[in-house]
Length: 278
Image (tube, rainbow, N blue to C red; front, top):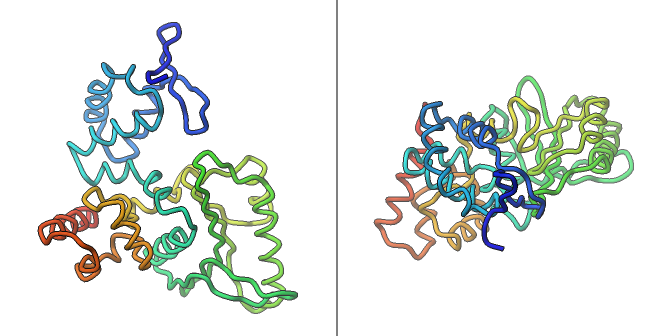
């Protein structure tokens, strides 16, 4: 099947997990507004996409068409709209995601390190990110999943909190928050348990305000996978070199790639536009 299902004049679009859902214009509009589009421009894009709705069989196809429509109007808003997909494209390993989490915390004024060994009461633990600021410290576990519809159930915060307790007992004089950051969602039980024990959660859509994506937009800590002028194979080369966010990217890094000089200029110009102060 290559087209959207239509039932009783309602279009059903296939989600990433292969289930179907009704096409919801209000949901699409909220995503446009969240990306920074004005009410007027959001309505304009929806009007532009609507005649071709039957061609968007999946949410992936709809996302691609929407992204192109936004890009014609603003590269910044297009990057904002594409953040979730760009984060998934940091995979397949979780290490680039850990660097992204560290860079996000650096943007908030922390000094952050990735993959730090810490003693516990019984065993040593490798903490994905440790971030310190004058007013507080944060120890972070970063859970990256390649399946976009994967939901972190209660087993993950249970395991993470157990590690926190072991580290806390071995370091009684050090005060720190413990955080769990994921590129997918948390189950209701995982959220309820984490709230109860004081475990800080961040995901692409949690908490409702100031989500992981919101922080990226605010501080412009965009992953390099948002750059439309950068080829996929070049993204991978840079990620392998530990260049994960666009603020890390310098002209010298592009010298490692087999690309023309005018393309290097185009890439750095895109970085400049995306990191420009509001």
